[in-house]
Amino acid sequence: MILYPAIDLKDGQCVRVVHGDLDTATVFNASPADQARQWAEGGFHWIHVVDLNGAVSGRAVNQAAVGAILESVSVPVQLGGGIRTMGDIEGWIEAGVSRVILGTVAVRDPKIVYEAAKAWPEQIAVSVDVRKGKVAVQGWTEDSDLDAISVARRFEDVGVSALIVTDIDRDGTVMGFNVEAFGAIADAVAIPVIAAGGLASIDDIVRLKAHKGTPVAGAVLGRALYNGAIVPDAALKAAA
Image 1 (cartoon, rainbow, N blue to C red):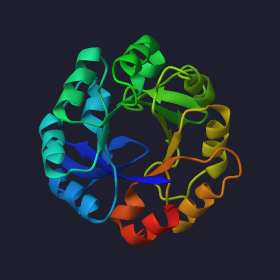
Image 2 (image 1 turned 180 degrees about the horizontal axis):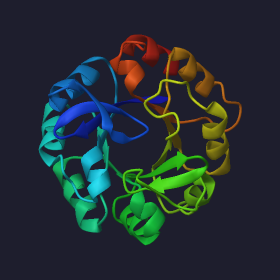
Image 3 (image 1 turned 180 degrees about the vertical axis):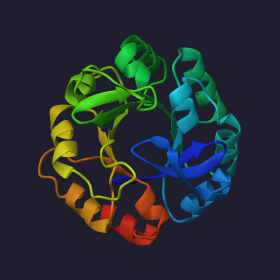
């Protein structure tokens, strides 16, 4: 299982929020590039970056911070937030992003995902953000009428490299993973699933790994990593 330490960007800083609400932001590092170096030096093999401002506005806002992260580390970076067009995707891949995450367009214009996955094999992921059973869009400010598995199944056999499934109801709360929900989506599709939202302790990683169906491919580490409840060495050992 691959662990993805999260760097959420708001106004150029590395923050954590609760339920995606930007008004709840706590700044953990004013230098996202410095934070990225810390996670890379801690042994993580990927970094998960989200432009929170961009997700809400529908366009890149924290370009400078993302660029600084890309320059500061050699480990691959996956990026989401405000990426809506083929031009956006191409620009970030040319800038050095290893995997581009598409969320709102996956619900509203899935053809863009199909085209992107064909143009950049294994470099496109889909974000499936779930609140009370339905998929949210536009930086989680709007709800669709689609459930997670319906959205996920749209992208079977088109070359999508991963589904980042976020439990919005638990995101930022360190309440613990809803392993059953993540496992159900992993069992329903052939695309690798990365779990996000609510991770509280090493036990969550252990429980996720113990899911008896299709293995969950990865997990995003957020607030529990920043507040010290999870130590990188122990988390990586549990995931290995």
